[in-house]
Length: 308
Image 1 (cartoon, rainbow, N blue to C red):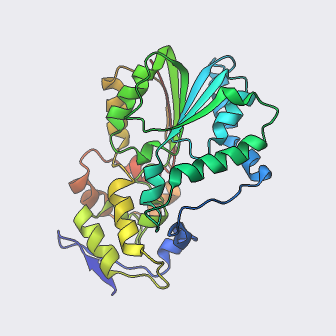
Image 2: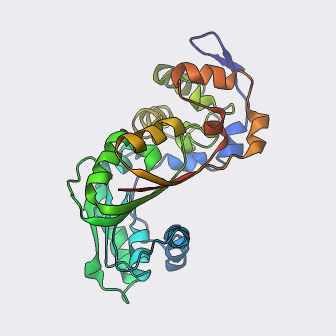
Image 3: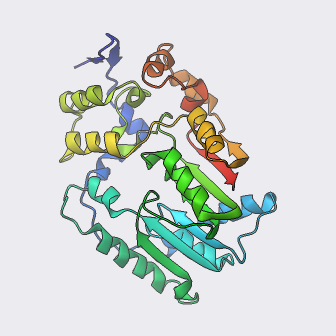
């Protein structure tokens, strides 16, 4: 197959090897979610997120010292340990095991137990810390019911996966103390790599041109070489359940509607991406996402800091 025809008649070219250029190891995403130890050096390296965030916040006069913090979508919780090392008084990490089950070949996996075991491994690397200051909960941002409890709420590569970001911001607002801060960095859906490993296809920005129905048809009909087990099913589930469609315009609107003060919004475009954008790309994508602008396609990371 040399092309895939969209419902609007546009012929989407199939470019062999393109997805490997964007996500060279995309096939390894199709696996069972299972326990595996993490080396101490790697755990230390992964703290770069909290290190960068604390450095950034210090530039706008905000210190993490003495603060109660939360990490939304914490995964292994490494940033919580880092936050305590930076002087936070307590750190709560929340995440939902269902996210890892949905991305796993084995749907009966006990993701909660695996996450707990891996976090306990990381605890062993932090015997110098008061472990009672670091806690974790299997809960989503929609289920949490905190009120005026946290000084800073962080989110790293989480907001693109939140199904209802406006509601999430409402819950975050409620959980923050008056004057509290939320710092977030995420990989938006509309950039070149925004489909992540499971939804990056065979043409630049193809994932933003397909409706749910068209995406399902695509992954069932356009089968890559050496496609992994569960390729079509897991890809479709991730496309429909694992990624939201929030544009930069939408995000700014939600921030304002939920009563936050916007302290900073950073979305730096990669102008090299211009060479990969077909003249019809934005036009077709806007049929699905009317608030889309060119900068949504050019920015692979968005950072925003808001205050209650």
